[in-house]
Image 1 (tube, rainbow, N blue to C red):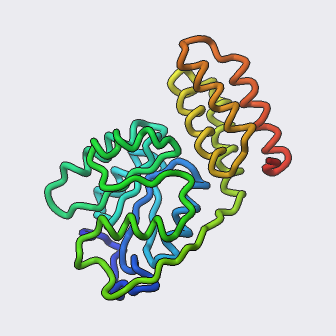
Image 2 (cartoon, rainbow, N blue to C red; image 1 turned 180 degrees about the horizontal axis):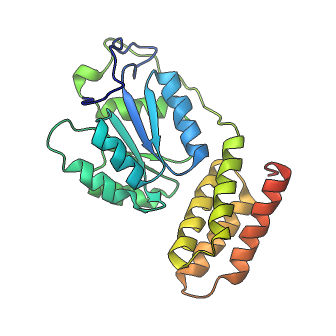
Image 3 (cartoon, one colour; image 1 turned 180 degrees about the vertical axis):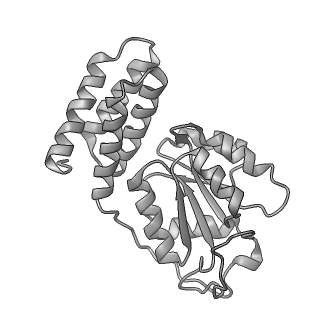
Length: 239
């Protein structure tokens, strides 16, 4: 399924223990924490992983090679992940398996309508859930033969990755974001904070999103977000 890949090599066939061996997974994800979880899941499963942090970067990857699986976050800094899903769904040859992911389960119907073949709800930590969703969408010739043991293993990304996400949000706020940029910051922080159970940050991000939804100024909500970000940067993720 992977074509025109300059890094391609002869990889062994998948096994029961490593059912995704030989597959390439392109993760289109803006969160370092979520991407680290995907890296661990792919590592345990035998798959190679590459990352794009926005739609534009993903398109550059797809001009060079065709990954076996593309996992697309629904909320990206330069657009809606559903648009990229729809683009890939229209490809006539060398189709990749396309999976959507989000911390907002309400977006599953939009992702599936755009052409996704499955939906991963964040936080993505279950090895069994990840493998089963990928395998169920793969053609029969890419699946491991025989029985496969279901390993109920949970991955735990290093919280340094969350610190990177917080720092990214701080940089966005430093650039005096406009309305759409604030909307993006709110949904980004709410999702990553939920993944690490940072309740205060999650609540503050949701409050910002709710205030933005009313069309009112969100000065106090933005200030609260900024304060929480500075606390976490100063204390190396005090949750």
